[in-house]
Length: 309
Image 1 (cartoon, rainbow, N blue to C red):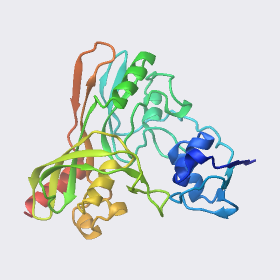
Image 2: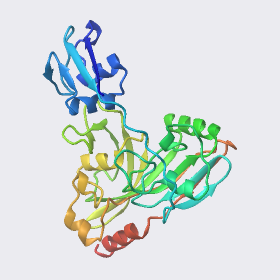
Image 3: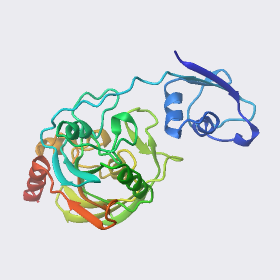
Image 4: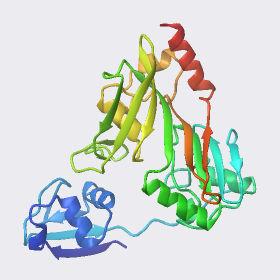
């Protein structure tokens, strides 16, 4: 049964965006507040409102909070193509294939990294939500490459801190349409949920700070291969920022890529691969680094676009 909550807007929140005001008044995350508004669960003075609406002191907020979803269970099942790159008492580093989620989530019934590790007999940290224990960062289902999973509780805590403090070196290879100008640069643009689509993200004023550094490694007639360094780690960050530059990842139809080019290169997903991961080892304190070559589908597309140039 939904929980209905009501509260007047205090004077201190005069002029705030609705989603920000909800987050502060009811203790929601900003993302959760925006979701509730988008789903029509929020009324401002008895009328539906948009998350970007500004609130006035004394206005009456009414929020209907749906009950929490049932807990998602980890299913231990082998994941073909999930490769363990490194394993010790504190961490396991894996090379995740496309089509695999980091952990279970509502609506996802496919394979997961945590399920694959469980099936292979790996014990991971019990910290974090039950369905994502040990997971300190994620990759999109449609993105392949390197992930580190914590095995010890100390490793989980230290790796989460390292990601918060941005000391983890996350580098991706991205094949994007056209030729970014300048060929080397930084995209510093806030990201939040797309204003009209619940399953997309976008550059949005007032979103979470998001910084992406890129450098052209190789330029072809139709595309450019970029080395991309993430300073922050927002959902779909590289895909959103490249699309905002009007150079979407090749094959990324969700964010405006040319379907004709994708078909010609035999791509059924975005050309994006987590190729390098470096961090201070939580057990030894030494700096460690791992690299992964693009898988066969991405390499074929790269070879094809290179041959056409």
